[in-house]
Image 1 (cartoon, rainbow, N blue to C red):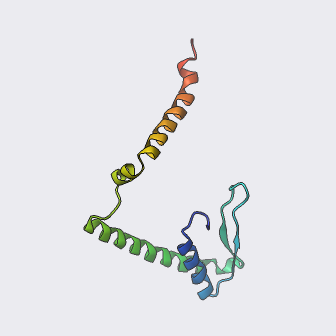
Image 2 (cartoon, rainbow, N blue to C red):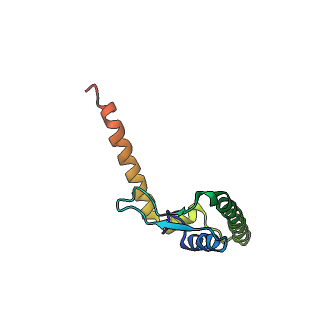
Image 3 (cartoon, rainbow, N blue to C red):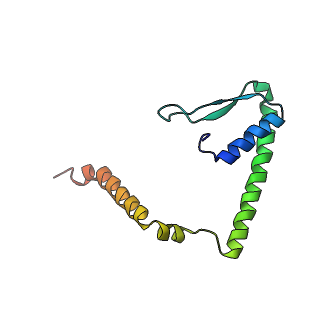
Length: 115
């Protein structure tokens, strides 16, 4: 996966750059995950053209996603936070326990400092 981007979006960006005759190369994610997978331009002079293409693509993609969400919402099929909690109650419980543990470990030196 390209830096957390869905595979279909990465494919569309690659196609967009190829159709725009913009030379690019891809860099895989680092072994430890310090740097994500990414797309780089071979010629920095092509940056304004690539940026304009990608900006218009992202606006179109966002508009499409927004209209799709509104359609799901109008039909009552969109997923809410409550639906996610109902689908994965153990995940919520594990998250709350982890948050409480981190909070306790972070604050315990200060709570027991003078004792």
